[in-house]
Length: 185
Image (cartoon, rainbow, N blue to C red; front, side, top):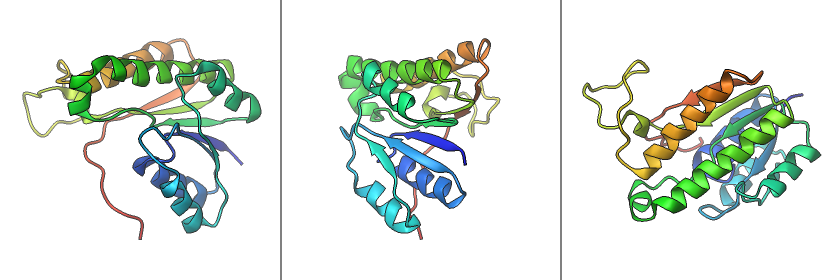
């Protein structure tokens, strides 16, 4: 049985991903500081799957607290959803976004390297394309300057992963999705 760490597991995308992982035979550990979420969606995921979900209320910007999660569990993969995501707010308080989104990602990546996690999925954003010259964008569309500090944190996050991937045994995937919506049946 493989264990997947889902950061931001109490959020919309994280909780739906947890349901899918559990329904496909994975063990799941959730971590979320609940600064922008509650455990309500995670409780819904437990009700849907009938499976208990281990959840840590931890701020991933705290390296020591993050490290303890990795010490306590053998983690085979990480899906990193945890980040602040409001474009408007990021324009008003850019340092908050740089601190939260980048430091948390660095801490998770450091642990992934130290504990030799084999797979890492990074939740990026369509905002990395900036103001694209051609619509619709594709995976081959050239990235332009991000239009917000939020978008810039995702560009920097992708750049960090591309640099690390050159020297790491971890396999990385970058997800650049647009506006995910929907509900569980």
